[in-house]
Amino acid sequence: MNRYMARLQLVLALCAALLLGSGAARAGQFEQFGDYQVHYSIFPSSFLSAEVASRYDIVRSQSIGIVNVSILRLGEQGRLEPVSGQVEGQVVNDIQQRRILGFRRISEGDAVYYIAQFPFSEGELLTFELQANAPGAPGKMPVRVAQTLMND
Image 1 (cartoon, rainbow, N blue to C red):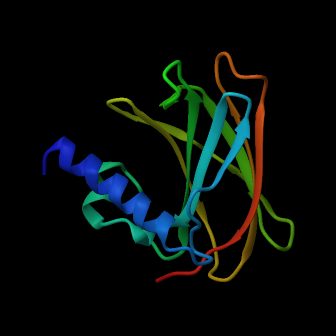
Image 2: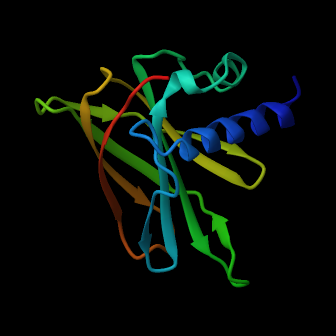
C-alpha cells in the first residue's frame, strides 16, 4: 500500500470514528481560541484497520484508546490551516487515577496530528485534560472533555 493510500485510510478511519455520534466518538469536537481552533477526537484504536494501525505504529486493541488532536488557524483567505505546535495532557478515570498522555506528532503533507494512546475499560467515564500551544496563539489553549468509550 502506498503512502497516499495509508494516509487516506487513516483520515477515513478518523472521520468514521467522528461520525459515529455515539459515546465512542463525537463529531465536530473543537474549542475556539481567537483565530485558533483545537480539534479533537477520542475513540477506541480497534476502529482503525490493521493496515493503518501498523503504518502509524498504533496498538490496535479493544482496551486501547486514541486521542487525536489538531491545531488549526484561520488563515488570510478565511480558511482553516493546520499549525504545528505542542500538545500535552492527561486522562483521569472515574476513580481519579491519572495517566499522562504521551503525544506524538504525525505530519503528512499539510496535515499535522498529535496522537496519544491510553488504556481504558469499556463504559468507564474518562476526563481528558489537554493543553495545546502554537506559535502566535493567544497563550495556552486548554481543552477539558469527559467521554465514555464503547467498543464496536
